[in-house]
Length: 179
Image (cartoon, rainbow, N blue to C red; front, side, top):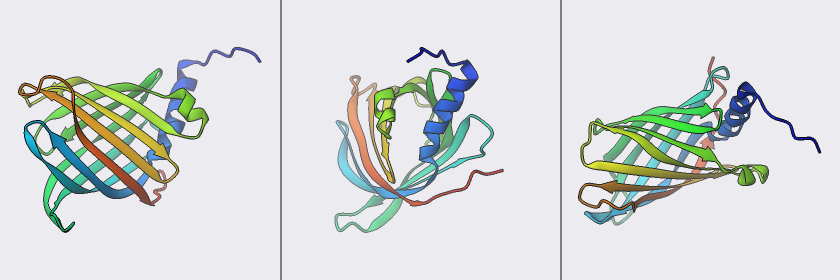
């Protein structure tokens, strides 16, 4: 077997091909906690689009609080941004309804990818408009039409990374590449 070195463009295409597994409309539920807040449950909708040309995807995520009976209540969180393929990894840039902006970078798990699973862990490299935030980390696991994620964060009141969110979503619709 020969050792083939990929060009930067080939690396971008390979990463982007893996990221297209995120395209679609996703729906599910999650739960949140943090040392400074009461545990809660939420409903989520995530839409991910690509245009088939650029090395990035656009996403929009919305969540709603669930009451103890599982009934959907008030909106909780709304964010929108881009997931960009890099020659040696992935970057997410997003803006949130609380006016925080964030950039996270990480890598695809190549071993998982060989098994047909998109798995990646990203850590914040930039946090803006929220002086409370020190660091965030997001982990994604996509297998077929199931997407699971975890979010951890560190704040000025809880400076170590603590588990914050965990959700399981199902793909409810496929989107064609936008042109």
